[in-house]
Length: 440
Image (cartoon, rainbow, N blue to C red; front, side, top):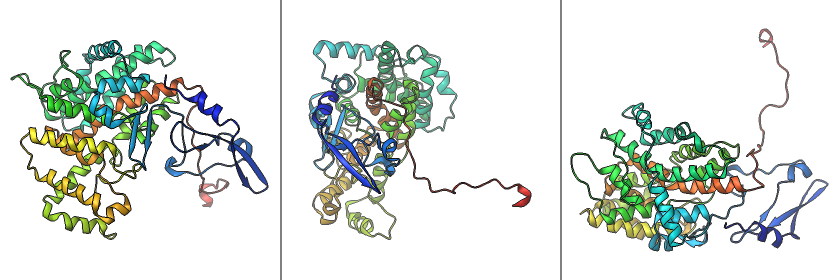
């Protein structure tokens, strides 16, 4: 479902690019995607030319063929299976988006109801996993707990680790989407020393997560629909983002035949890096450091000074060279949440709004294309909800799990998939003989 492979290969069957080096000239086939730049197929480059390409960070290399997510950084466009992210955030909800990413098309009403019931009825964790949580130190970072527990799922759910069995693959997919909110919420509860709260089947996906995070046995907790909707939007906006570092990690781990729980744990570990999943935490810290609108000019000046170590976090993006389309939705959601929580005059939001205004009008920002990204506002929303900064990345991992598992599912079904094996530009010592220790 959602596969354009046959179309694109037929379209470019007679096109090629010539590469000349030394006395050799190679004809390399070309291919055109549904959207985006053409690609040169270099799979036979080493076999035919005895050379490699050199591309640190793989910024100019397509590592796979995918029909899931498309990003146009110049236009500031993000599509899930062809649907613009702003339309999905406004008109859809997270579990419908999950179905779309996993299966390729929006579900019918009957398909959606069946999928929602399936996820809802798999949210509980194996009871022995409560002992697993209690094995961590109380001061363990929630992300460390999430990483460990996701990896441990293969020990508790070994009836869905055979990737050659389509039924087991589907069971693993549903389990991961359903159980990640419970794992993340329990990591939070354990971190703050409160009792673990079990999932409830009468609540929707986002409300259930908030209830597991903030309810306590001694009093009733009602999830506000504005907060539930805001959390659902955060999940939707972070669900997938093409071949980023953590998604590529999941695919690379999966290429070895590793079970899906191990692959998603690898993605969680990669996401933990501050350059990837920790960006919203860094953006919030920066806004708090600035403190008031009056101090913004001082920090803008520091950001423009190459000799100053200060950097504006939450601006610009590795891919987007325009306004991050997710940031527009987050901006509206931030206003709704802060108004609800009685902090509409929050100085942090005032700083964020003024910085955004400057970024969209100041020549320095425009020239360098430093537009606000999704991390700019998501940190403010999560903070207003009551989450500590240590929970920002685990929530990101919860949302991104559906993207990772969709990419993993697509990779498993791809007949051209093979184990990942990047090459290198070796710059070490050439061949040399061992010298006995007495002669050195």
